[in-house]
Image 1 (cartoon, one colour):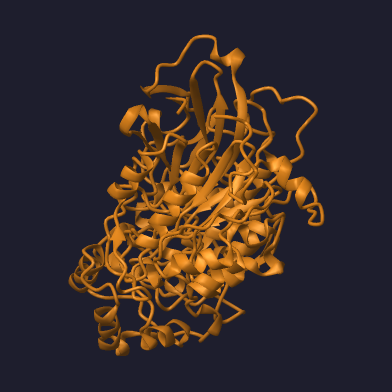
Image 2 (cartoon, rainbow, N blue to C red):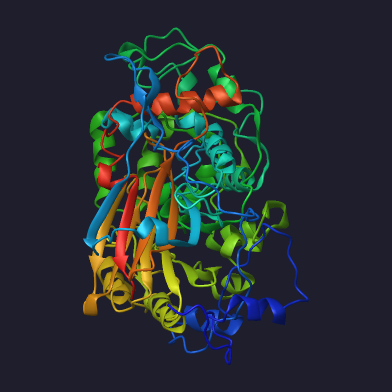
Length: 591
């Protein structure tokens, strides 16, 4: 790829230095970035499903941390190359400790690695992917904890600690010395969706505060104490403060006096010390991640004073089947189910802050100056998105690299995804306009989970497109290097070959809510031999691997978050993926 391109037009691919010279009136301090986004008129055209023909407006590059005088030496400390949490006891509730690291695997399905590339390579860009934080308002009336009567993992004992767990991940990212392989500065962090768990305003505020910095109290309802399943006395849930011999204590879970009070107290997040961008997931877009907006009764129930905590196994199984098989995407049957159980509900404190948020409110919250952090303003989203009713955008990562963030959620309901024709056309136009730059695509859903093609209620006449159609489009463009996503809560890296020798890697990363609770550093390098390499390095939070049940400090809670997730009944043991899905060097040919 050429390091320069024509600046005759206002295309997104315009060279950074030219733009900076032309936009001297707009200045940002080191550490701030901008999104490259459609002009207002183009965004509106995209919303109306007309072909995207106009060029994209240009904005400066997202600058990461200030580059050191010379590249840092490669390092492993603080990454899973050095150590990974592992069980140190063999039965019952298993305590964690320091385990051996995961070695790096070279993958050559798309190109043969050439000897001597280590000495030749130059860094193109590096960044951090965070995905599926699932920040949970555990006292929210809409939650489905009672599905645990049929599925042990439908409710997880560690869910009250998502906030300290996420803050600890921010602390880990802030402590990284740079990119582990090249030593180059990290440019930005990208969240690839399911930042929230239940489309609740409480959760959205916690997410934005954790990422940008500030005080967070993971409590709703009664400010004085917890009201939920973990002090309900119901034996199907872990009752940490109580002597009740619940089902989890029978498996060895501890009694921790003061746990719930500690989980709800005010915590402090330093915020990321580099720019961050946001991608939307189905749990951000819809209540429970699966029900389309529009039912006023459910919206009132979300903020009301009643909460269902227990149902029979047969009823739970029927409801779970309806969710998994998309039998009730609008939530009509779910509403009727709740109404039928009105006498079984317990009283809780009503709270308007638990209300579901719309796509417009999601954008407005990101654009709020209170959540700017180190930028960019809107974290990728812009007023053009507000005007057009879209949640996708492009931004320049480096001189030769452009990022594209897609909205793969389907507002018609269900947790799998797709994209509309307008977005598909916009994607193709953006790839074409940036043919002289490498491209990294971001989304929440993977190519395999984009199978939900229900029409968007806001655009009923627009066709929806599945993952195979997106793969086909990407395979026609030689500048695509990687598609980075989440959703499946599992590390999985897949090679994709397109026509004419074109190829790219799909990188799916494990969540931070289910063990092993990871994020990923991704580095793009030019090997100067006709090949490129993408290095992926998994990281855990900064919390120690060993826990101390007497330590209910912010750090102690973050360590407990990991250990509880490891021991969660019904938890999958394969979410870390195979060795070739974790710390890797992914080789591919230059386009």
